Length: 110
Length: 122
Image (cartoon, rainbow over all chains, first blue to last red; front, side, top):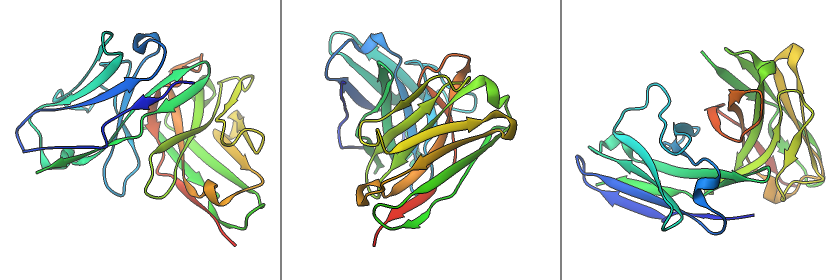
């Protein structure tokens, strides 16, 4: 099995852009789709991005996903930060019938 | 509207058992794979188990393998998680989740339930 490593925390001011990384420890990041989930305080997670860069209906286009094969990582970019974006963000992928989550990144909107 | 409603959580002693249920609505349940994901207090998300749409394939995380059984009843639009030989480290909120596409289970979640808490303590 592989691991997905995320920064423990990031912070940025309202209106700015922030990027959260998710690095795969072994195997190709592009070999299996990457998802991103948002978990606001005291709430269940919700799907933000699926299959690297697809947004479910209702998710604003301020949220975007990408992968970088050179660093074997995926990224979640949030532009035009709003106070409501303050939450925990988790990346997720899979390998050989195992679903793997990153450790999560706490986003603070200053 | 897709809804996933978990139930069955509670306080159980170490070594005990619990059966979690998830009632699904708003989609053709029998066509989709389903998953359970848990979150220990103050911790991140951990995959527990998955079941394919036809119940033929079931998968388990290493930390629960041999102690947990996932099943589904398509007539009742429900998925279940039987937890046995419970340990303190199984204390968590357990979320029922739906796989995104009909047919093959691909471990991509599009909907989450609100979760049911399980506490293992003497």
